[in-house]
Image (cartoon, rainbow, N blue to C red):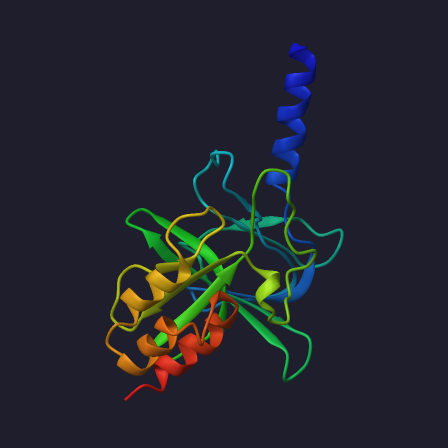
Length: 202
């Protein structure tokens, strides 16, 4: 029985700490250096405590090159480009006083919407580092306005406050949007539209 329990923990850890696949892209560092090659993003688990406390991006020049790791203190952004019209940007954003997370930029303006996929129990995340936006590609969404020090959760992998309540509180300075949320014209699948409408709210 003890052996089976340890095996379960090992398998859970392997699944929970699985990472996105190696993907061709650009790693933009805060010192101005741009590294072009293959990049692997960390898959975050909400079930186990990370040992190092920081989400590190892996980089290698090509398949058999040395692997280097970079964290939030070094990385400005990660860029994956499938075409001129299909580009994914990833940035570290503050989600608590002492924690930053790596998120994909979904839409930007006076409020910027970020998204990521985290593993829960044995669920694995997206297969690759580049994602064409679809609500179903992600299970966590955060928003941060210009001048704010912390991003605010709108949708999280763990059940907590409803999207409607969070959005109505956060976007309370846009009465037209709040009315639509109240009347259920928007639901959580429309989060991108919600943020875009807020950014156009006069």
